[in-house]
Length: 151
Image (cartoon, rainbow, N blue to C red; front, side, top):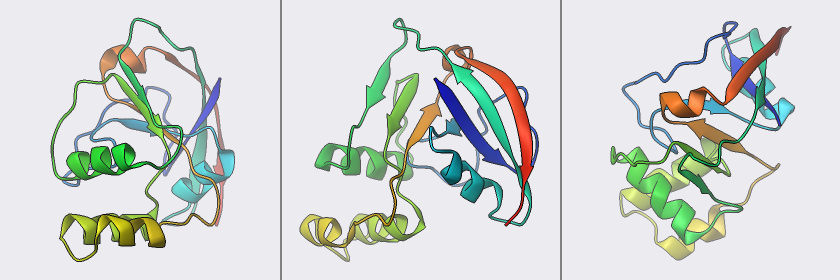
């Protein structure tokens, strides 16, 4: 399967970076199967690169997949964004984009109910993310190429 990673740099050797902000599926290396989404990631701050990888699934890894936004997806994102670690090698599913993230944060803060969240959480376009959370998971990726992209 071909995956894309949008970045301000070429990333031949993916790594798990710990940042000060918790992400949807916790700390890891994030890719997508949607090239245009990777372009959006790469051009957040101007020009960037779309890094292309070949992904071969390893059945020995612990993988969690969310086919669509569900209560379980929302609860998992809330836990991860609140700093709760998990033991999955790979997590895959829809992305809480910038708009959705605001609703997730409002839900976390108790400003809106779960029902209100689902009423507001409508994507303008499909999203996909796959997070490689362990070194074993990163070993399933092979760097292919990179191309420069602009806003």
